[in-house]
Amino acid sequence: MAEPVVITLGQVEQLAPRALPVYRTAFSMEQHFLIHFGIAASALRVSHFMAQVLHETVALARAVENLRYSTQRLPKVWPQRFLPRGPLDPAMYANDEVRLANAVYGGRLGNDLPGDGYLYRGRGLLQLTGKDSYALASVTLRTGYPSAPDFVAEPDAVLSARWCLGAAAAIWIAKGCNEAADDDDVVEITRRINGGTVGLAERRRWLARTRAAWRG
Image 1 (cartoon, rainbow, N blue to C red):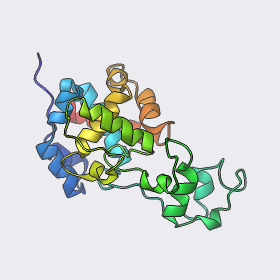
Image 2 (image 1 turned 90 degrees about the vertical axis):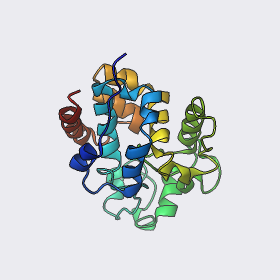
Image 3 (image 1 turned 90 degrees about the horizontal axis):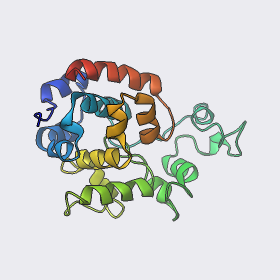
């Protein structure tokens, strides 16, 4: 069996010089998650995983989704929800993260209670979003790590150095991303992680850099 691919702190520093301390610690201490879930089995899988992580976290500099959008930006991000095409007035939601999250995420993604949209907004290395994703990450992670937190009950555990890499690896596996990485299909991986193809061009740019780093 081939040796697992290692992500060194030097590579993290080169790709993400402003990486948050929590992420640096996770890559220093918790790469066993990547081994357990088979991500570290090939340079190609690591390259695709890291390309998505680097995009979702803005080069490891973001932990929680930024929902402070301007009035002008909201209709571009959610055109079906905000005027002129959607029913919502962007002026009522601009720079109000709680109200915006509950409006755009409430009633879907498993968010069935008042306030769930904001409570289960994007977090962590792959920006888990929606109660269903937090639950799926928990169940999958516990197949190999029975002591893992229930991320639905403790959503901020997704941000901890101990579990952030595990949560990302678990949702990656649960959505079949190793297989898509083996096919070198960045479009399919993006759909599985993002639910669409938002940021695809930037994800491709990250992939070029990560493939150069790990020669995947």
